[in-house]
Image (cartoon, rainbow, N blue to C red; front, top):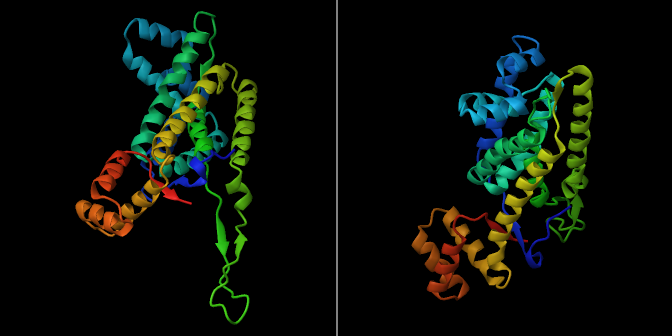
Length: 300
């Protein structure tokens, strides 16, 4: 499901920086799994309180025991088995690595923070007072939030160009050929579908192999998805909304960023863009200033 771009002319650029937030999530998975490897994983999360039990969370909140609530947040990185650890790390890398390139670490950090906390509030409110002793573990909620953003900002379709000329009068062949990964890049639902199947399998396997534990709550999962999808959609609208009525803005921003990329000072980049495109300096400056802090867009 590809997110439609304004007038088919704008697309979000991918940054090439270090995926700090994604790697931090992966390290969290590794550290908690290492901690739990000292004993049987299910017993570890039960004995240490690192799993999330709804009644315990409500009592801790009512008594102001924030240390216990923080302790329960280890559940976000818990893995009962190395198979769960592998798939959790894989999907966090697939979804998180891509989204961090689009959104940047700051925006993704906010999304992850909400994905690590808000869904657990729903778990506590919906399951407390029912005598349930179920302990919830796993990064299902934060990964679902990443998946929601992934659907709004899917990978772009990519193609490779052949370097062999079609005839002797051509230096390079301009005809494009498909990348072997093109089907998967074009349709992010492939990864999403695998993710859903794996999480359902974890849910049922957990009930059989680890009675008293669970990795899935439908309402909290829906909230997680809404967090990721909503934040990404808001950021996409903020980034592209300023060019919907004036495609010339795309050219201005693109030209300005090209100058900044080669270390041209800000003021000179504004003047250079103004002269190159024949636009008033004040207009160029206004468009560039309004675009600051938003995800970068580029021409298709």
